[in-house]
Image (cartoon, rainbow, N blue to C red; front, side, top):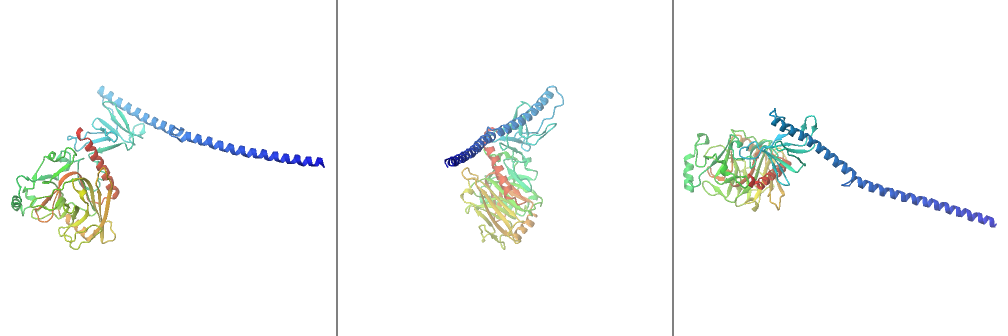
Length: 475
């Protein structure tokens, strides 16, 4: 009996011992797993951290690629310099040659500008953008500027620089009818094209309403084809007198304007977009008498006894942008969602407010005949950016107008040969109202730009204007 009891006690002790062994094994397994996870985490962190294996490998690959491209460029520079020294046929310089922006190069300049230090690379430098094909090497993966005289080779990181040139300082060139900005106004009339002419009138000679009316009566009944100068059609080739040195802007001084002859080629069947970037002064100038209106641009048939048919301008008192696409006025035209003046032949686009005058402002007006809430109406849009350091937001206002009205505009404008930039009539023929202010950029497109295109234009144009201001003392 006692022996049996001992056997049961022994068996129980053996079971307990076995359970303990199994428990220790499970604990050991859990502990082992935890330790392995910790080690794995540490290893992974070492691998992917900023100083980890992967980062170091990626960095080493980049450094090798940069060194490889630099070595290729160094050999090319050495080859060009050696050929020049030996007076052999010069080896080919790589990339595109950059050209300083100055009077001499007003229509061919091409520069690289580093954003951080605003350093400019021009004449004497060559630019190789990412993807440039190098013989017996392949495509570059990085951006470079190379000076073949000094042997300097500088690698540029993406987004760290801008490439400004005469042809591409704006984002959108498709359907661009006219472009006047500090990038291409230059001091060379040829940069405007053969059909663009700068006119002015002598406000000292015609300093009273009576004198201006008398002069107007003399040319009344004639048109520009008679080569009758007219008191407000004195041609000027001294464009440099109208360039603001500090900003590079064109100075509309209240008695000058630019006229572009088209020979009836205006076609706005795909839309119309007008952009203005500058500083409008709150002075109103009209030839015959004072008006509460300043002209931005207009289309005209060239007859002195008739006013402009299509007009865009700003109402000084109401502080809004106004337009009229027909000399017949509003009549049966309908508008919606923008403020409306039904008692005048003007579509009031939108009140801009006090920021419209004496401040840098960028606004865009767009008409899209291919977009509308139904077949009867088309879309019109207004974008406003006050371009201030405090508030750089882009405001957008959409509206609509009668499609038939716009269709009449399409047909009417084809009959008009002259685009007047910086002046417009508002009521009587001959009573031209002029723009007074600085124009950093103004563009007219014969299509409706998309919102993305408009934003690209704004970003690139304001960026270039900033560059002009920051480099005004280095010109």
